[in-house]
Image (cartoon, rainbow, N blue to C red):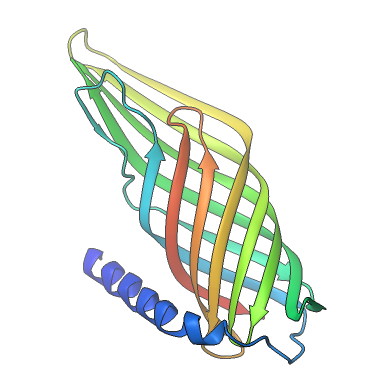
Amino acid sequence: MFKAKSILVASIASLLLGTAATSAMAADTTTTEAGAYAGLNLAAKTKYDHDCLGSVSCDNKASSSGKIYAGYMGAPSLFEGVNVSQGVELMYYKVGSATETFSGLNKTFSTKGLGASYVLQANFNDFSINGRLGVAYTDDKLSSTNYTLGGNVESDKHRYAPLVGIGARYSLTKNISLNADYDRFETNHMGSVNMFSLGVGYKF
């Protein structure tokens, strides 16, 4: 599973980096139709933004993480020589656990959520870049184990929080694209989460 994920991440990254520079040099002169899309991304790197002050050991890097998303993008309009599209996107994300250890106390954190975002996208031939701004409903979990006194405490908190993201898309075909995204989520227990993910999208 880990080997397959690594191969997928490496392949997508190589294709995106190899085509982005040449694709972005010329503005797309064709008209892209409006339409719905969906995709799946696996995290290449995810890290909780937590200072870990006073801890004996701290691992801010989250275990397996990713997101699924779907949205609708309107037809582009020409702005300063660039075809710009606007749309909306819904997302479900899940961020794996990270741990922090004090003397006799171990804490494990994880988070997941549903998000809705406004999307602004610039299109260059088969390559596009986008920015996303929205709000997420988060579900943050904290598990604390006290090895000195014994016992385990579970905490589950929910709240609305802002989310932001940027991304790049490279179209392999009219319907299939390779995607690279950076997303930043807020949590109750571990500050913010920074997730860089790679995946595949489909336009209907």
